[in-house]
Amino acid sequence: MSVPVLLVTGFLGAGKTTFINRLLQQDHGRRIAAIVNDFGSINIDAALLDSSADGVIGLKNGCICCSLQGDLMRTLRQVLSRDPVPDLIVIEASGVADPAGITQSLMDPVIWTQARLETVIGIIDATDSARQNDPLWLAQLRGSDVLCLSKTAIADGADIDRLRLAVSVRGNKLMLDMEEPIPLEALFIGDAPSRNHPTVPVHPENRFCHLEWRCNAPMDLQQFQTAITTLAPMLLRAKGFVQFKGQSEATLFQLAGNRVALSRAPEHTDTGSALVLIGERGAFEPEVVQSTLDRLAPH
Ligand SMILES: Nc1nc2c(ncn2[C@@H]2O[C@H](COP(=O)(O)OP(=O)(O)OP(=O)(O)O)[C@@H](O)[C@H]2O)c(=O)[nH]1
Image 1 (cartoon, rainbow, N blue to C red):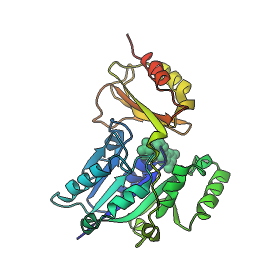
Image 2 (spheres, protein in one colour; image 1 turned 45 degrees about the vertical axis):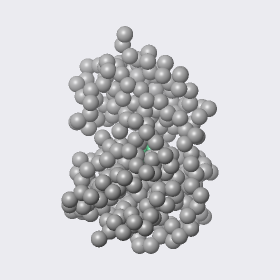
Image 3 (cartoon, protein in one colour; image 1 turned 90 degrees about the vertical axis):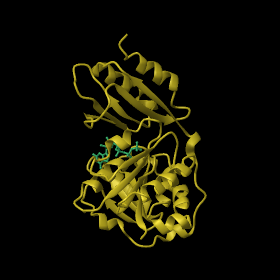
């Protein structure tokens, strides 16, 4: 029997990993395998996914909507060859992916007999309403069957209304709210008509650039915060694990939009710091990011 596949898409930092973790933590009794695609070579999302997943596979150094399509298909076959086969496969696209390219690959007739794309879920960040004319954001919206608004508890009410309106004029799609419980069954909606009309995928790999930064020595918390505040205007997204002085455990660092969060890193995180910082070509200056962070490394 063909294993159902859920594809989760959404802009950088929209809340895809958070959404998948909430699914994994539900009491559904299914063996769920997760395939995650991180922008860069540091497997952060794979480390952040809940250990209740029946295996998490990270695809890195590229985007599964374009350069890593072959890797995605190979990984899918590998997951399907497991014994027992998972009951459900969840794929998290990177935040720069156009889901149209992934959907087209998954509709390969051979793959379809073993793994059928059930639903494409688009995560929309309610605090990022200014993005609604962005071609990539629009492609992610167009390629989704079901939408899920994230961060509604911290978003402005008027922004949420504007977003709902912008989304509804572009197609009448089921819209869920991530602050409310979303039972797994609600994501199984039957045939999705948009898949019959594949669009030309947006391949946005040249639009974004990123820098990966590692440091083995513990850093000063305050200096790190100052450096991030300085860099924030050129960043769309940054995340990773940081080892601060005087702390035995690593800290998870997240920057999405203009929000920064520091929290406890998962237990198995390696020592030392590893960050991925992403911005748009033009605004993002890799040399400035590199030198600002290098100054944090104790000599
Ligand atoms: N308050 C609130 N925060 C959220 C919600 N969803 C995500 N976040 C926060 O937003 C940040 C990014 O969330 P992720 O789930 O990592 O986003 P993502 O889409 O997987 O990010 P990328 O894979 O890097 O594109 C994290 O700090 C999350 O804690 C939400 O519904 N409410």
